[in-house]
View 1: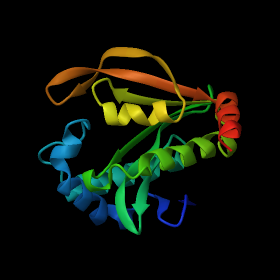
View 2: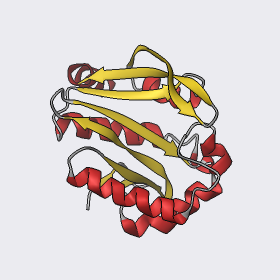
View 3: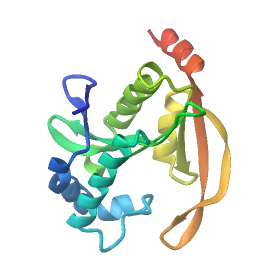
Length: 186
């Protein structure tokens, strides 16, 4: 099982079948909050949907195509983060994340992103990490901006979000840029 400790309070753990009920409960408590930006949060989202998602996550991991981890804060599941895709030919990956509303404002996503960006460059030997956010999702966009990512552009009407298309802002950082920025922050 993949576990990445960030500090005494924050740990990332591979999203596995044993997390099904906990993951569903977190989504269920945060339906209206998550639905604003997450197209997969539909009114009928169920425990079985969580179970299926986690099985798919483990298959993506086995296929070397990406994987998601649970964000634990003080031993409580707070959200999820992961590599939406791993493009081995081009050494590119895309990070995605979400957080329960009561866990926002603690730097959890920024810390988790930092850890997975380091992992992408150091362990997976990626060259590029992308983050895509809905243009109007200012909280999500603040994460790559805070981490020093460059804004590459806007994909117009690139995602169907419940009843309308939304634009996605694409951010990226390259291995060399990340290494230089990390050295400056030390």
